[in-house]
Length: 351
Image (cartoon, rainbow, N blue to C red; front, side, top):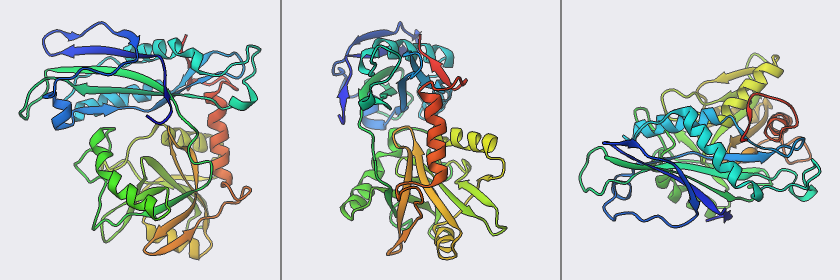
């Protein structure tokens, strides 16, 4: 594991005959699984990525928009024939677990985060797996919901270098598939392309769809945004649309768009298809302003360069050569909510 696992994990089992059992928070330990468990053969597995924070004002532990993660985990579970659960009960379990692991979040004791841990967080990983010991393609009769946590480093302190994929060789998601669900099968098949990109000096793959149109979908496991002046001269924040199911409905993605629409009404916020060729044209014509990836793990990660068809296309980084202004602003807005610097409905105390 990258980072240190915390002391505990939460487990709750389900069976088709009795439903959900009683949840338990137990010491962190390996799982005992039958070698024929369906998760090991048919990928009955889904997960979420979340973070817990400590309020800089009160010292209380809080999570960010957990209701959205609960809904998405339920949707992912349904896509791979795993059981559903009550969203509110899931959030209650998550909060109870985060409260137990409170000691892993820095706190000086006088309502001030330690300077060295100013933006400290605890990464939370809820997941569900099929556990029925059976070889044969059928819906599992048994499952397990787990939550673990770990300390992760802040990833990508420098701007990202992305490598545009070749749709003729690799496609991450396709209409009618499961690119909209947070399932392991969305990520395992991308690791070879990611490894190849890393060997060439890039941080992530910018995933494209359609060999002719070369439409942008996601950056690695994160959503991708471009800010440019569109052909009408208006500043536009654009990202790929959720339809036709090739892009994850990211919580950070949704939050960025909602905040920009609310606080920067002069900017056009668009969910629409665009291609890497559109990016190249915007760069060459001087209309590009910035680009960034966003997600729970990456948070807001500025993009400084994209490898497209053998050309390294430079993306402006106007804030100290490290970020764009819009990415920095969105990051700050979200941090204020996540770390409790302002009162906001998206920041949910765990106790």
